[in-house]
Image (cartoon, rainbow, N blue to C red; front, side, top):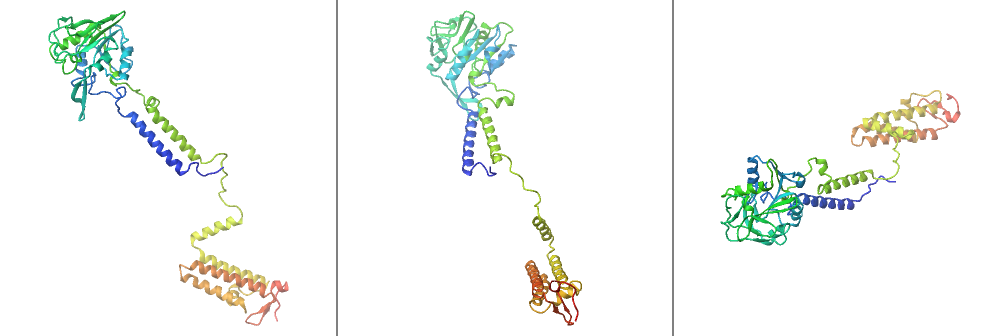
Length: 428
């Protein structure tokens, strides 16, 4: 059982490095990465995007026409009721996005808009793009294969004439993107391929839009594109039902609104675990030992030694050195006088000042001189007063042990000490 720390300095330093690395990795998970499931594409092809390739204008147009629009960030299929339509517009071609789209296509009424463009974000304005480039046809066909693995994407030079058109007027497209498929029935098409197709299997029906420029912000206002886009939505939607745009494939995933719930979900769970572990280590390090608690020392030391030590400390704090030594000298003289003279003795002061013959007189004079000179030097006052006390002690010892047979004073009187004669002094 010990009260020393459980952890060495090297261990604590190593743990600090590990904690810093873990915290940095947690921040990496929280930061915006390249994974569209965790990073919203603010300038991409979504209904939240106001860039040229975004669909914010199409969603706003539907709202102006009194159509309920839901921009779904979670459980999109659960929000589609009977008569509503789910729109999956230009999803990314990553594996994570394709797995989300595959689930969305299980709905009863779906509109799938194929992707076409990849925008380069403008660093000065994240919701805008500064350049676009066509996606390779192979990437677009990865999305198309989810509904028709044998279908092909074609890009003819122009598509001004669409002989097959069951929706509205002719579309206006600069560089059209069409689809060749035997699964979908063409709603708008020409000899090169179809722009809009329709498929029905049992209770499930789907409308395929090959070129997203019909509903994008930069192409919606051209020619009859807006009429065609509205006709596509109304093909499967009943009057009064809503349109649900799935945005989870674009990285718009709703987070729990309660902060406490976020602490137990990835990636915030990493930070929570780190904080809990740090608190446990802090408690462990603060304990510092195992077993029963060590007994506390008594608040005051017991015995005469402790009492004397406390009194000496108080006297030291009050700077009462001189008065204490003066009383000690008087006490030495009084005790010595009582033991030598029994019932009669001269005043203590005279006894101390006069001294007697031999070494006792020398010690008496030395003690008196030292005491008188002690206050002349403030720096050495304590040492000089201690020397005076030592001289007084020597004076007492020599008188009591060296003059047991008695001695004479100035008047010629002889006094027997109490220890020498055992009784009162005799005068000659």
